[in-house]
Image (cartoon, rainbow, N blue to C red):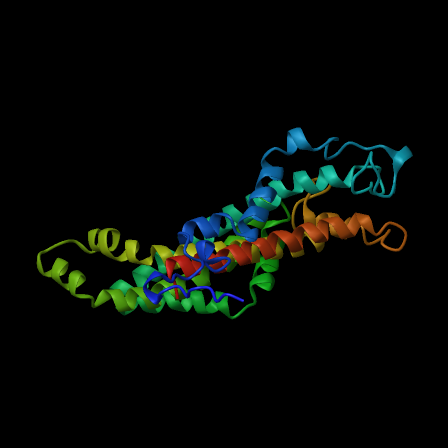
Length: 292
């Protein structure tokens, strides 16, 4: 047997490892193509185009086909009133995502303003703002939302306000701690020495440095808000029937759970998948933005 000549070491090269190209891809590309982002995009797509995707109206009643199991005509079966569960789940995505985004925006606005004012100005402003937040933190978020809804009355708008107010203390605590560190930064001190006003300093120097942390916290908070809203809907403190809301749909299926599991299962699955996708997306976003 003839020995093959060995390749000189200077001509040797390493074969690319499987997945190395993907590992070296830009972080935003890996985020965009991650399973959590694709799943979340699919949920948003279904909710945005529910009017074109849903085969039936969300409140369309058909008593003759009540409690029909999943089939080609009814992908997720029908409920006690013959309403198509798939159509109601898709339309319910619109409401749940709207509640999540709107309530998160309200909570973030209240919390960021209170946290920045508390951390930057200190003194009595810090005392008043943080004592109010301590009162809100003394109650679990869900319990606080229940109290607010009970006072204002059950409706979608009151539900959004209740969950938004209940979520604001988390933002306030986070922003206050970050603002206290930024308050003594060199560029903030230099701006104060040159006579720049406090609100201008907050707008130009403080808030931009809080952006990444607030975005990540808000992204994760959307999932929590959706869970709280679904819980209130399950308790009958959210939207009113026949509005297609996931928590309310789960509650409607309790009476027929033993004979029609699909009425409760699919709305519950929608809540689970949506919150998991949002949490996973938020964790990946935190790694990219380096928000600790």
